[in-house]
Length: 354
Ligand code: 8ID
Ligand code: ZN
Image (tube, rainbow, N blue to C red):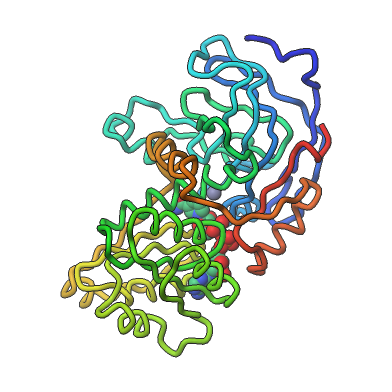
């Protein structure tokens, strides 16, 4: 290993989940040492994704093992590298991601579907993440941040951005066609921007008028408040002249999913990315007769990531975010749970103590 420089401390502040459903503790824990292909990164900023909240609650069937450090939108500088590292070097600016690493050898990795690798590791879930001043990344998989990027603004691209960019590709829509973005939170407000940059026309659904205002600000032509509309799907069918060609559901609420299916045009595709721990009924008759496709999508490959970052670097994507401190993490989770966050929260880790 290229040992951490003398200025790298041996302990750091990190927000740790000790038990599902209890507040995170900002603890002093050991700074890890990189081995093999790993690199140690001093984190400057990290986005807070709703997945981190699901992780802290243990919401999903496959659970992380406490104690763990969440966070998979971290951005910072490489301060030490393991012996096998060749792709990045000390001083480079990199991030972590949900797809922390994959095996590189299975049939999915071989065929360009590394996001489906059964042996993948996940940042802030099966490997400690970016809610600490330092984090490990796998140098073969970590996103490389474009030169000159604003380190706070680019964080949300690393999960929200790549996920919605890949999800939009999976709608199989073409430029000029309608795409519904359901849920205008961290993912959704960025999805509106990728959709516009990709030439789609955007309809947006949320349960909060301020979020719909944000969607209009980013280019949505049609907005529907699912909490007050009598029949959101019928409104979308009417406003788009027969339904949306594609839909991307980022909402953290099971009701949004059948609504998105009901908004589809004949032959349309709905892509599910939101992960409420729910089920929803799928009407067999209309799915068959209208030739609908229902598809799941999980983050993106390294190639999707570099494409998503390139849209950002060319000024096409401007995340809306507010900057907070690590000590605020439990308040941030509370606000997220109650739908009170506009866009994304990004934590300034440099101000969080080392
Ligand atoms: O790769 C993936 N599939 C992936 C990647 C990243 C995140 C999946 N996710 C998942 C998260 O785990 C989470 O379940 O996507 C979901 C959204 O993450 P987020 O954007 O980070 O969450 P948020 O910022 O809290 O936004 C959620 C939005 O949903 C709206 C809320 O108002 C908020 O704007 N919403 C709700 I709650 N109910 C709604 C409804 N019925 C709704 N919007 C429309 N209809
Ligand atoms: Zn995420």
